[in-house]
Amino acid sequence: MFEQERVLVRLQQRVLGDEDIYSCFLTGSYGRGDQDAYADLDVILVFSDEATRNRAYGQRQSFVQSVLPYVPAKSFDAIHVRPFLHIALYANGSKVDYLFETKETLEPTSWIRNLRILKDSDGWGEQFQAQSARQPPSIPRPTISTAELVAIDDRFWVMFMDIYRLLLRGDYQKPFDVYLQLLYFTLPEILTLLPENDQTTQPLIRVYFDSNTEMTAAHLRELLKAYLNARDTVVRYHKLGFTPNGPFEREMLRLVNKG
Image (cartoon, rainbow, N blue to C red; front, side, top):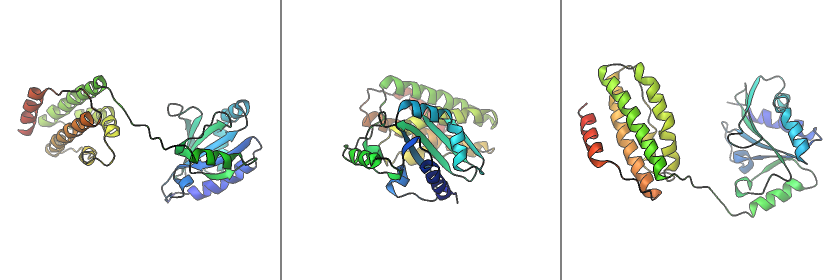
């Protein structure tokens, strides 16, 4: 469907012809070799020193376009994820994450133990791959404090009831914005905190909003149950000192289930 292989061929041609790029390799699914037709490209561009890296990063948008000069592209910085990370979206559907690094700043780590090397100088890339492969696996476990969970829980209840009251009134336009906020400001954090493949995940990711307010209200009732089950799993899994307000929640569930 998308044209990642075309990007890959052009990218390798581009980096091989650039003397400033000391090494270049792919990580992620392309590094592991288990990519599919919808995978993005995770590219690490390695420079010999910070001055060269900084100069290249200053021309990052030109670099993105030079990879596929005849394909329109939109690119933007993602320093909120990692310094010197630049993300490109090509109009052929390809997404490429370009990370600009140096030999000194790029440290061997287990998450980049599987590489597909596109360019290497002095065998540095192969040595780096070997060093990364020796690193013990380390997957940072998301954490949350009790106070942070309380804040999420408060937001959920307030936004949930704002939506639900308006749906019962027959209004489906006004609560839609709040529904989007509910999805954005509460559920993603809960999802990241759940154990992998936990059974409470699936009910939590069912999204529905329609002009039929009765059906949307029914969805909200199921979403409330899913949220409470997921929240309780987070409390147990992360061993938090969170104690829900039992009388309040029981009465609210009774009220909501009356429709």
